[in-house]
Image (cartoon, rainbow over all chains, first blue to last red; front, side):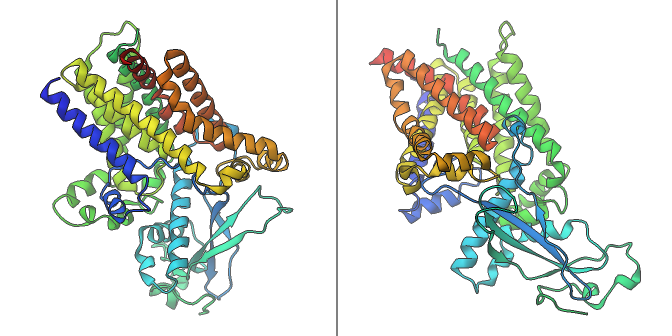
Length: 202
Length: 275
């Protein structure tokens, strides 16, 4: 065994040991800290769907609040879809997983600290708001809000369980497209600010 | 029969299929990485200090902004194709070049992990493990060092099944047998008609839940019992991951976890010979 072999064995052995210990990160704070420094995911987490598996779909919906204060219909962002082809080709899975991850984090933090506004600066919140406000918009839409709901089972009118709404965001002002006629530049849309109350009219 | 270099080529080829599929999926959904897409870098960079300020922020901005980030996918595709060609019987073998290709995939995937932060799953983690082991297995200066790389892949694979199995044992939904029917009763990770059927056939649901736990907890022990038992374990995990891909749509899990199988067989063979 050469010096190189010993170095390789020690290095990979350390990663293996760190992986084994990190599976119990809930018990020891320093392990959670260690994992938080692992920005390249070289220390994997292997507890798939356990001990408490996700037994519902996280649904991310958005709707417009129009310039006259009325609400548009809810639309779903990256809805889950089943098909046999997913076994070979499933290009939407990463976005679906990101939405699910973001929804889980937002639900956990907002229910733990409902008054903590720092959540609005978190990556899950910002990436969700950034994405929904970039979707095509009517010139009559002043702002947009999102909600996260949980469902189980298939989407059918006779579903056994009603969707469970977990989080509803404040409305977020939309940008006016550069080529929009001036008559659409209402007071609120000229000065897009932070979140406003739901249903605020012009 | 079970050579270190031969095993490394097979592991590399199977894992490269996972990389090819993942990168082609990334290209199909490239708009998600663009400005104001779900993975818009202007938003994501606010989540990590070194991406926002400091000496690395500018080079990382250059690499991670759209469309430059797609280069990380291109690099992986080229390296994966090279590893597949190298695994083909009769092709001249260039071990150092294979090590470089595996290392390039490792670095590109680690960078993408750092950039996106959300949206990764266990198959991404396993691919990082596999390509780290492969970089060592094909780049180490002597056979012992190369074997260490493959043993690392095998050990992480065993750890993944054991951890997952033990964690399931700790979950009441798994122990009572309602976990599989309830997971399958979602659209995102299941097929609701099948989930409903399983819910009304409690015994089948219990059998599936406990079979999963049994394969994950006890299966790796078969590696100590010699090659025929190790092959039986490999067949079980191929069946497990194929059914997961089919029902849950986790296609990446199949290729990334099955890629470890040759390393598991090699480890079992050498372990049994040593005992």
